[in-house]
Length: 94
Length: 267
Image 1 (cartoon, chains in turn blue, green):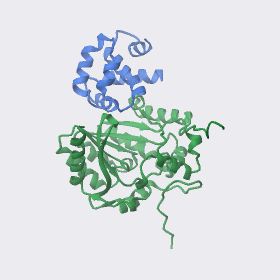
Image 2 (cartoon, one colour):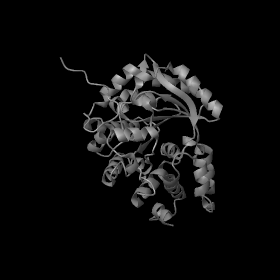
Image 3 (cartoon, each protein chain N blue to C red):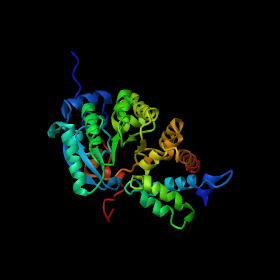
């Protein structure tokens, strides 16, 4: 998958960055009228490797609009690095 | 004696660009009184998956594609003033009625009437609502660092800065404001970043409104400030609301042509 390769190029897979990249890509399609939880459900269908990360995101940010959630995640130490990495990968493929 | 400039309404062909900070002051003289501000309604809408909204009067830009009601251009005709506590009570009541936990003010530029907005956000701190989304064009925040600092001290407030253009020329053509003011929303973005405020950027990048090259310039500018802002950019599309059609027609744009509507089966 192109998006996976973009976020994990040059080493071991970074699941967090892959998940954030998938969220950024889904945001293009879905806009702000769905909560992040709905987007996560769609993004992670058939991707069991994301489950533990999705559960964490759901608990903290699930009911927020996706771009608001992403803006808050970039200020969250747990997610900051992954969000910035995914952002760069997203822009490189834009 | 210098003639006083007329209050700008709809953009028309050959308009004279205005200073949006001047228009903000003029609008505040009409739409604000002390810490009170004019509102037209309080209810919840489906955007952001449900949000209680207070609809305010008045703006400091005149975007030709804007979908806010006539209260943007004719604030004198709308006359219900609400204090910050009173307005927040109505927003909370709307949230309870519709079963939502987010709040905002919309329909005009929320950062006009600084005393009102800061009072409203302070009143919000006392509520059980989860999030206040402060939608802004960034003009006044870009001109007033103390305003950004004050917002940054509040809990559960997220700012959404809506950019109108990627070049000064595009900014003037779309908003009616003088090209020098193009920088203000970017100053707001830098200040929000420096102050650690939760925010994201939106932009009217609809290709019918913004040429592809200008969109690229906007993305590059955001990327220079902080790459993630460009990645998380919310791109807006222009919709054919009735008031939008009126504003386009006043500006000399044929809305039917703009929105690709034919004249009928025989055409």
